[in-house]
Length: 103
Image: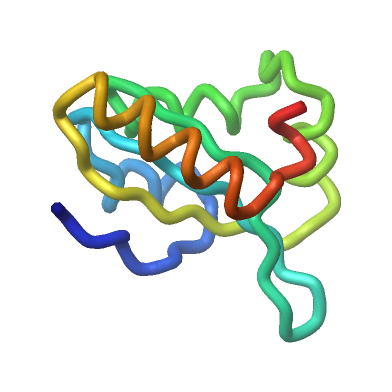
């Protein structure tokens, strides 16, 4: 299986530079002091598009919006072409991190 990407500052420019247009699972992360905390796990068949949608003012998830407005945020991803595998990995990640914005 592919490896998780590096952790990138969550900006439009970085999403366009690093996020693939293919499918995969991604984590949204905030930094609090020296600690990093996963606040959302998602998946998409086009990660670049989906990560840009979260940055838009039209983001419907108020929890994600709040983190993006008030924290230094980052993203990581893993490329997975199979929708079945994306579902499995997304659920594993949610179980592991219990991200607050996935409720």
